[in-house]
View 1 (tube, rainbow, N blue to C red):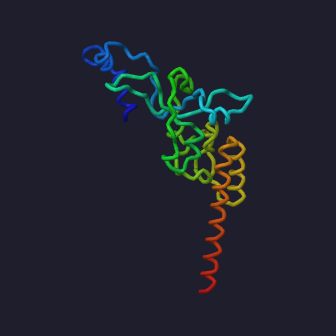
View 2: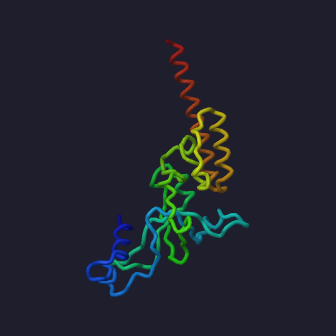
View 3: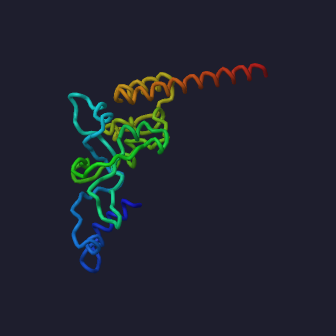
Length: 203
């Protein structure tokens, strides 16, 4: 909502022939106009983000645009809010996603021609809490596959194959988080099967 209101104030021309932003600050907004949820790339600045970049790959990381950082009184600070693509894809809840603040010169929108791309809306990036193994959409780390219709994996072999594909695409640090989680789920599932198998056997 904050992002929508800010964009409306800086882009909608009123009856005064000025935007609300210009009426308030006596100058036009000169920053980038990026809609909420659009895909962007950003220049990593923290040691952790830099360590996850491939040595011979792009220096930019993919992310999701979440809004503008405003000063007291409504002015723009010059900074933007971004969520990391891999962090969103690997999160089980919204509390696991940490907003990153960057100067607007370090963030660039990703477009298909002149059209903004919205990964969560088109299903190429799963929302936190969605099952990354049985999602009907494409792999959360691969936007290129979003246009392909894929059948939901149902057999153990298909799920294992999809898991291995995901792990190959993930950075090393993300794999260290996901692998123990998958192992824990597998142990819990085996215990449940043993329990219910014994319980049913008694009857």
